[in-house]
Image 1 (cartoon, rainbow, N blue to C red):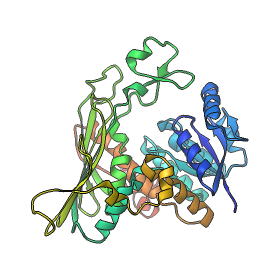
Image 2: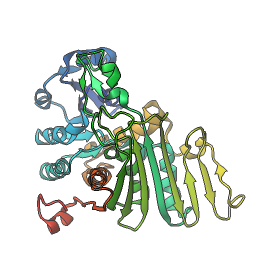
Image 3: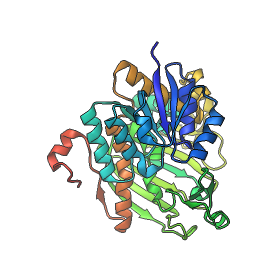
Image 4: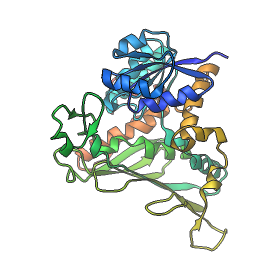
Length: 381
């Protein structure tokens, strides 16, 4: 069986993909790229992959005989590095989000369309084991019509705001003692732009996309020297008339959580939050009325193959790797193609625009070709 030859750019987060694609029987990791030579060599020693070629030049890696590239470089470079790989004739799997600018997202869509190559964004939260079960419940009508959803992604990343030349990260205070540490890309980013872990799964569950967004920002209080807002909250309206609320916080004193709730005409569900251990569900006509019923995690994970748990993030990474490899080998559409990618990414970009305008409503453009023809190339509403 032919194995897909994989190259990875980014020797930080990219190592998750190196491990995953090394485990999969349909792929082999043959190249790793990072601009920082010490970081690159340290990663190679940790990986212990025989014959792995190392590159400090991304262009040189793209010139090698790889079939696909995993883009796990700094966030603002995702679209640029993805487009470079596509232009070089390589399929692309990119870390989240697709980009941090509307222009980058539009350029990405046009490049995928022009080259005809496979592109997929690695939104692993969509494939958390309980999401598979919730999708079945929604499709089967157990919640009735889902009319409202919320999600939160709270992750204090202040210790990732500065980085030295070997890839070690520091907070602002720690960086004062390490003059070689430079400000990293996460410092100064609006947290709501990292929306895909929260919004992506909900849009997948509801088979929907956002059309408008209103967003409010707390401003920068916890870490004003970095300029990152503490937290941002977006209210989104979907094409099918649903309402979604998303909270993202990256610069705040909080232990962190990733949380979802769905509310429907016949039932609701909430994943664990805070000290809670298990999700809770409520279905009209089942159990004691007007009281949550706790459901053990095993009830949610039943649909996930055992082999998936060899991979990271609770088994969700397996779906990303296997799904993209199947798309390449079988010449099918990737599970999260470039249009779903922009459905998950663009609302975060529009949310920043709303926050900077005091919370005013901003239209979320649909970047599909049939819609773009209506408003003209390079004209973004």
